[in-house]
Image (cartoon, rainbow, N blue to C red):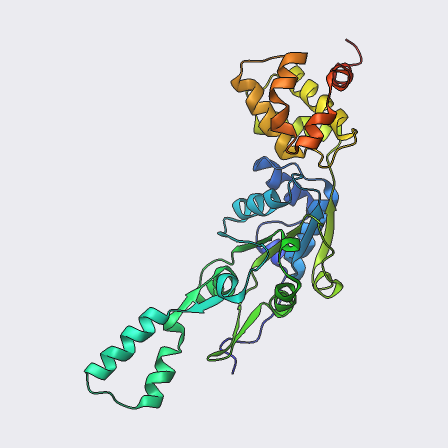
Length: 316
């Protein structure tokens, strides 16, 4: 049994206010997300073709922020599913409201019973479902609401069994509930799947998506990001910060600092009333950039001096 009309994809890119790729770039920039044209193209095609977009890259490069900025651009609700090891259907998709079912059956019993089979069918109806993020995203368009942005974040943290369960959802935006049937979206949610590549995601899932790799930004782009997200930072200081962070990424580290760490460090330095970098301030705040003790140990006095030299403008 299917409880929705047949699913049809449409040119959602144009329908949702993005007539072309340039419009996507401009809309994201207005939300303080600076996107390269290839990423904007992937987003536009995802909207136009009704296909999920699969974003992969190192932690902290802005994958999750794409979904957040896109939801603001579209004026849609952001529904986020944070993946983790052990994630299952009852947490990600749906669960029966057993307490309410039990109360309902007791109420029927107190009222004189009735048809037992009808009572069972009644408690296994949609009225007794607890929507979790995936079912909520699929059913939202059926209630006449704007399709949400569905963020399936850090899929590589989930088990392969859950990854396999996603195949039906990402292929047709439908969920099969044995007691009810198939629940399908009238209009697909805008699906964004992210991965930090701690393990390989199966090809079958990637084939259902448009793929895009997000790398660390170049110097000019990262400076723009800092100035937009931390407007209190003077331009010369933002440039100095970015030069040092990019030099730090060239070190032999277990985890390179991402853009998120660049922004955190900038905010920390502003909070400390700093407008230039020094040996002491770098040592005191290095824990904002590096999250592993082994990495911190590698940045000795010689490395600090080397990084500070690289942070200076070529004209200084």
